[in-house]
Image 1 (cartoon, rainbow, N blue to C red):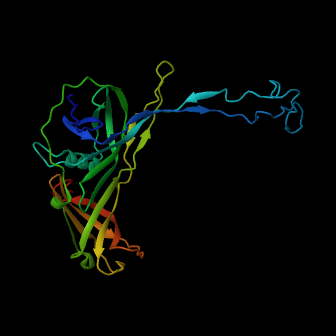
Image 2 (cartoon, rainbow, N blue to C red; image 1 turned 90 degrees about the vertical axis):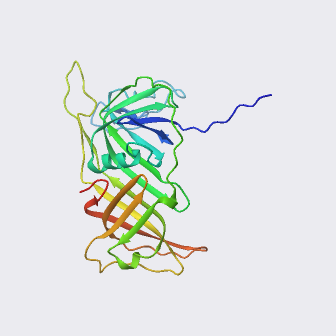
Amino acid sequence: MAHPTVQPGFIGIATIEGRKIRCTSFDVNPNQTSLFYDHTIGIRDTVPITSATKGEQDPLTPHGSNVRNTQKRIWRPSTIEVSGGISFPATVLDSGYSFCSRLFNIAGWADYFDLDFWYYCGNGKTFSDCRVNTFGFNIQAGDILNIDASVMGKDIADATPPEVFHKEAEKLVTWDVVNITVSGYTPLENLLITGFNFQINNNLSNIYTNGSVAVPNLKPHDIRAGMQEVTGSLSIYLEQGQEFIPISLTTPAEIAISCPSLNTTMHVVFQSNKMSGAIGPIVTEIPFVGVDKYFYGGDIDN
């Protein structure tokens, strides 16, 4: 008896600017709720007709209809927010441009883009006029480079059914081809890095405007990018515990990132680390905050 061949797969295919990517998770959706105008009469409150205060009704019969007051009767639909997240493993650049690098640049500049996604390679949606709210870059020793992003969009519609998607195998970006170097702060320049991550937060907010009685407008008219924040951390292996309190650092340090999917340098200031005693190797985490024009050289050249 022949046995079916188990095929590896992903949740679905996302497309940005014509580039397809196999996603490990995707949950961008329109979000809307029912908003109620609640009165002050509880389910068993008496309804005074004089200046008396409210009390509780004494039921004449168990669970009688005369006991229960009407609840939740006036409501309206909320505004609509198109938002959610996407994550995927970074792959080595094969041709054209790296999807990881392009999404990083879109996030860094808070550019608009359209996003198509086909759930389980079946039904699909088009999310138009999107912006990246947060972008995350995470790599740990012995692991692969993982990218995640949260996006917000102005509208959503059914996507045209995709053609059958066949793609050559791509090599994942692994720890051995990622180079992280620190300069400008001597205590961290020659230490052993076991992990690195950073996040971009564009602090997006939806802007809603007036519609009309005939055509109510509950979707956002615009998506405003607020003050951008960049944070992250380095994980350092130490044979002995060491405390880093960079109080003497008067100029920003630099973190250079070089890998097949992304090349950039960051202006950062380091924060003091938190030491803890534990059984096993000593790995301490050094947080940092991006400053000035965070990225320069290569991707997002400021």
